[in-house]
Image (tube, rainbow, N blue to C red):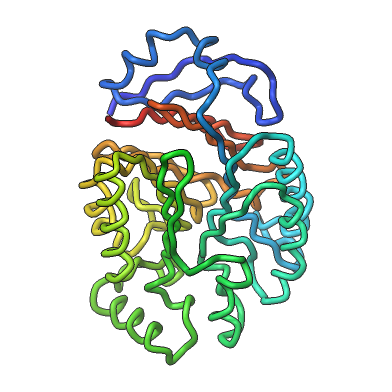
Length: 315
């Protein structure tokens, strides 16, 4: 893959578009965007926009190393206030909304509730750093219709995946799901960290069917996950290769957006962009993003330490 970088200047916004915009492009897509002036690209109105946050990760605990728990409420409140000033279809939190303890939900959700746009939540490993009795209640607590689901907006299909379907933490000990997860880890993924997870076979078949329908209807698709797939990294899903094989055979699949790796990451493979947002938690400076959707690209406008990207969309 060829990577090109260019300066993109535009009107100052609370998302920081006055900073240098980093372009991440395929060589094949470069000509189309290069023909436009930077100002024209910056001033073009998107079809729609969304907000995205990864790893806000609140706990009523003393700070520990990079985990600046005491800053989480103020940083989330500031992001919510910023998003409320913008026209957004929705905002997604990409997992690890809390760090631990069931009581953290009641302390932190009121901050999120001030958002004037719809929320969509993704399940991460820390959502389940709670007692077993409450684990079946997590999705409902976050207002999720199910642990994984899909919805449409502006002729895009958005798929909320559950990377805890196979995991050591996502199910009560002794449950069939826990037993299945631990057996799979022992047999197939013993070298993978137990703080990661995997997508179970039933969910993977469902993702395949969702993307096949999007292909048939000529839609574009973005998938949300807590856990990365690519580039290779210790934070990736146990069965990342199998999941990539499924999504990359569908022309509708354009972007996989995730968190979990607090440093962030990016890679492109087989025409799909794999973007890992930086964690909001880790530094005094915040991190979140607005994603602007155009016919031929998704523009990621980062705030705080989150970099900007332009993601050209394969035909």
